[in-house]
Image (cartoon, rainbow, N blue to C red; front, side, top):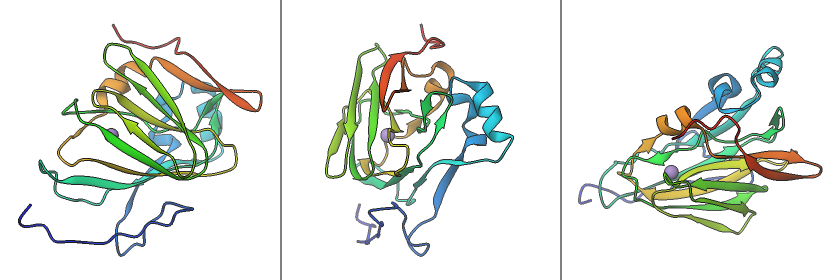
Length: 194
Ligand code: MN
């Protein structure tokens, strides 16, 4: 890390946004994510009338080197597609046994986690709570609020890398769906793993 210099990044705690001078967010509108939702007809119906932003996150382009830490903010906007809440794609780390911390700054959500062997963990997130995502667990943020933006700040080993493909192919074993005023965690009927 001898070529690193110290830096300060600002994030608005309510919106998760960084000033444009610090970083630019990567945006994930529904059109870019449609396949992660189980109800494709519902997704098509929404897309017929526009392309809502599901989530965005700040990639600070820090060096992806062993010994460094990568960090930023994740912003999941409220909404549903069919009976599923807005959520991130979810991923394993390429160096799979690397952990991550998500600290909730705003809103109300869930971190869904699963290991390759099928162990499931999920934790609700509210402002002031930090979720520890153990190494080997795929992880996805889900906004459980119908009105508030879920904002988290994350930190992980900078060279961990992202494996989105495994989840794109298989999905998660569990879905989180609207049930009354709350949610239910149910089996994913189209989970495509072994
Ligand atoms: Mn991660």
